[in-house]
Image (cartoon, rainbow, N blue to C red; front, side, top):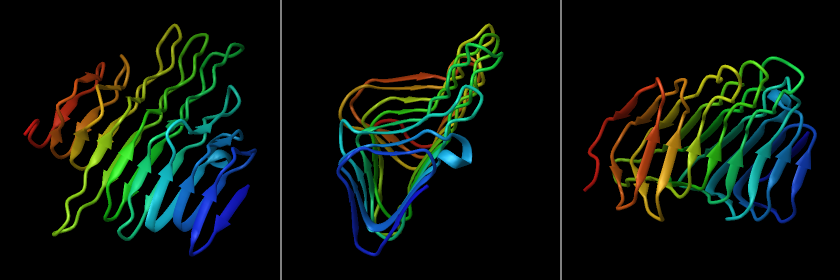
Length: 231
């Protein structure tokens, strides 16, 4: 396992690869390079805990969790407290492994990103299940939260696609939910949200804005808009 804790700034400048879990805890987390874990399941989790300085993942970099063909990929959890934000402009990939020798593909890992008083901006996130000879693996859920206060409103900015589709097989694996718990902004281009053909709900729990194309695929799941769409 790789663990770092401190009250200042932790900066990752070279690819961090681990056969165990990775936990980084600091007032400010700056990821100028990616993180990869290979153990899968709880042993392959990536946990990023930041404070007022927030957490950043540079564009073009990736947080990737992998595992064997029978083990769920590790999840990714990002928690930011205080007034910090989460700017993860690279990619997050927790896709389940393909299983060419067995019946069912591996499941994708869950991705959760939350702030207590800060904005969230993300690039692409993929949590789809792996391919199986008979049944695809289940996807991992995606949940994004950019909590606001009574005086400051924060948004979730989507700069890339969110994909939580079941893996392919004779029967496609189960899609997972995509939950956007606060106001969403499309700022930089068209975005696709996809939970596949077999289910997985897409929920906008607040408003949706931005003069950009939006494509939504929820299969047998539901798409819910709670607030106003467009200003």
